Image 1 (cartoon, rainbow, N blue to C red):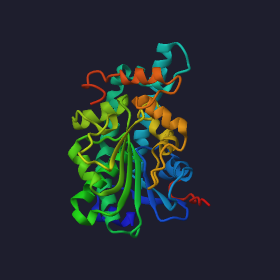
Image 2: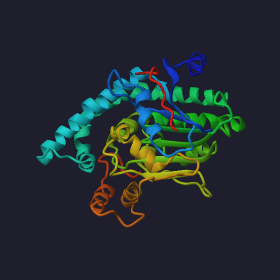
Image 3: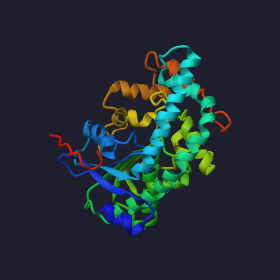
Image 4: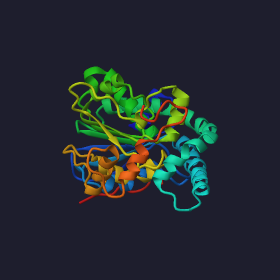
Length: 336
């Protein structure tokens, strides 16, 4: 179906679904990657372990394979160039090879400006393709090829943008776009934090629309603000909740995510933290729940995390107006 929709709507060179899991159950979960790492990486590899090893409603899990060549180029810049450069800079600055995620987040900003050209050049093309892929995903879901089963969408970085564009396109369809998506989780999202846009997207989500963000995601701040000139970016801050909101949620993972490149490595942990089930099974590990809340300040902090939370909450993005504002060939697993 994805192959047919790609040629019907055009604009992307790759748009297909890879089966990841075929557990018993009604739900359909679709993971959308934001970048890939290396020539042997694939959408299936990104989502295989995270979507097979968490408490859920069961059902099929799929990985959306889109624009893999461009996502590998972006991953090469984020991981090989940007992250390694920042880690080297941080180690030199700190005088030690033991560099934690929070220190990296705080040491990165000034050094990142020298990498801004790399970020901008590798970001533009896949961002444009993400918008097109989002519309194709919406059209595909609207055809009900998945039947009338509840759909959960989850993505990070540009994969999260694919999902938000998809929801916007479903909203533009009116009633035809409703009753399809039950839950959507977007992490490190390069998309405006505009309340009206999120309210429109939430209108076609039956249960939960979750914005997972990191206040010290300097890469996202530089890349997205440079290309779109939006001051408020969802992946950097909480989205304003409309009156009577029952759908949109904000989860601050500052301190758990060391940088934009970290979302891929932390997928399993983040999915456990957020929860994907319609029963809202969030934070299957109590320590994850406490860590998240310690950073946001909503519960007494976990010992050793209070100083991290304080450091991160006080961090600002210099010069940007404030930090608040094997492809489809592998066999799917089956859980018992």
